[in-house]
Length: 189
Image (cartoon, rainbow, N blue to C red; front, side, top):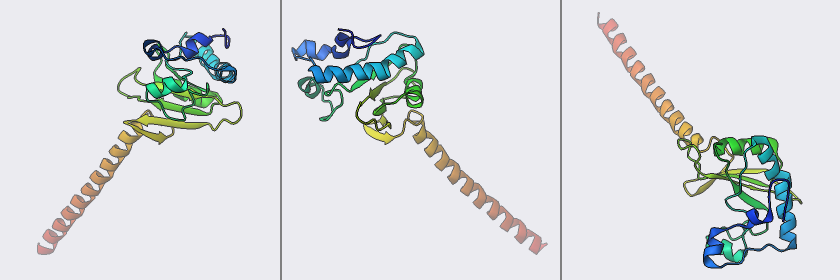
């Protein structure tokens, strides 16, 4: 069944874990409607913008499948509102920033992205026809942080800024010490 111009129900429900464990992963009619909205309002635009075919690594998950993979208890995947995506050859930070700047969404999470490893992580995006929050998060080292940021570079920059402040204070102290020594020498001359 085709959900949108580029995506089918089969690829939005495909799960190797479900197949391996024999877990049913079929959405009901209401969940199919939500998957259609996600595909038509978000995923199709991503596909058209980057002009590279892709399939979500995770779309709809039945409650049993979500539990089996350790998904969040109230995951939007279970409702048919979310997909985890990545596009071959496109850095996930680039993808997340494009979605943030160009589309309406409920939640956008740059997950497990490492700036020094192109292609790392994935982008979780959800769409809620009733009320989109436009919430942006990044998931780094087991913690959620507000904003997409720079894929974790914010922490590196914050640390560098703190080192720079410490170094500036040290230089200032050394200069004051040297001024004191020079003024003592002048007084003794």
